[in-house]
Length: 310
Image (cartoon, rainbow, N blue to C red; front, side, top):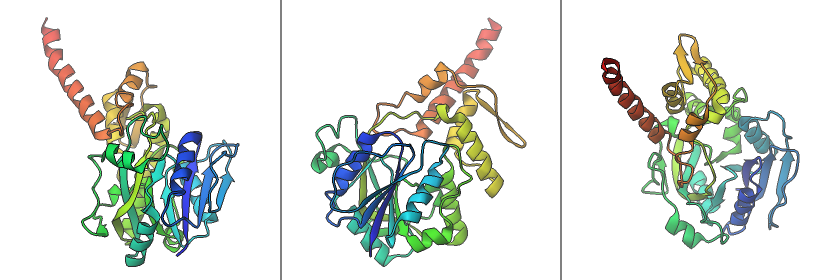
């Protein structure tokens, strides 16, 4: 079984270089690495013992769905392994995905360990990564055996997953109507459910997520989130990204109308400050941000009667 690693990249060349260095440590090297480059310039990357192809998509309005589909279309492998550019593959990731794919048909999702800031400063050090990486509390752990069935398709996440190319083509890839930010993963998972494609957790197919600045909820992507939420609801008849949308409502940025969500105003520094609260953590939690905003709204509501009576 020939494997193709597929990724997309825009900026963050240092993170992508670490992804390549990690693949150089693979016990089973990939057949190739295909990078959908969402900018005009090629990356200068470490040398590898396997082919690396950069597809220059340009710096226009290229979506993540389009970029992943472009990488998959050019990939020659039987098994496509999708990794985000901020991931470092464990030495056993490829061989474990290949073994799991030989045992079970469908889509496989691997493990993710989140690294704190500075964990990669000394290069690829798997012993250090394993000591310092933490699990996201809102994500399932590895299954007891080699693979375990995932019963909730809303758990699908494109950070680290694999599937036969034939299944990816049968599914039609990612829906390229998602031009904004977010939602394409939820849509892909929903498509799996509709088409009856099994979704599995895979033990040992692990990546280490490199720390970088992140804003949660993504108020800087407000317009894109609203656009993609509308696409999802129009297609499936229900909303997605509820935590993000709920946070935007509590911030007073949007309101829910009969026809969908309507933007009320642009985010200001107060909202951006909330989004940066978890920036230095190994991972960011949408649920935690929403919980904090709900508690703040409840406290404000409790104070309001006292202020009115005064």
